[in-house]
Image 1 (cartoon, rainbow, N blue to C red):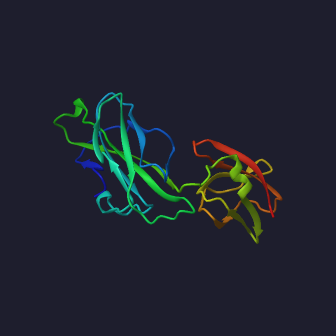
Image 2 (tube, rainbow, N blue to C red):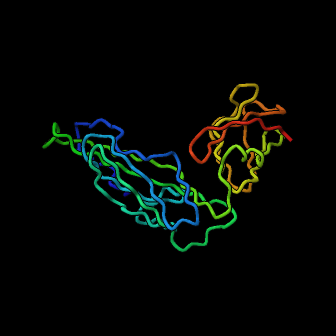
Length: 227
């Protein structure tokens, strides 16, 4: 069973509170680095037990059965209240592409402490899981920034619009607007060096305003003409 998800007993439900958080909304692993560090912070007053692991997008497997080319330490650690904890991620020998980014996910499971008021009582205790993207970036691949828009194009394709991503990056598109109104149904992840058809609420515009997320988690926008 994935992590230490729950202690299922009865009657009393402990409130779910955000305790341990990950600094940042995404992790970039430059291929030239031997290891990188991700910072956690326990914003609660009491210690929490934290389990961390990396997956490749398959959420059906438990952490112990996932095989990814990274070593994460410590996989399990107790983090005191109002204190931080560093996670070290080290790349292992791999055959990942060297001409484009590879996408993984960092998971952090926060198992809350027992509350003194419920000592000796049956309780239902919830764990809180955070999951953010981890991009493995080969040497020479540019960052995601305002210049990335120069390598993203749109084309009308019947009732759909095709996004062409000529960057070597995974591009997260949060919003597409037509005449100031949002027309995409949900955020879109476009793989590097690929095209993707998307359905919009309204089509036919010659220019759309697109918002993407850069390396630092900032939302950046630009107008893109339909070719």
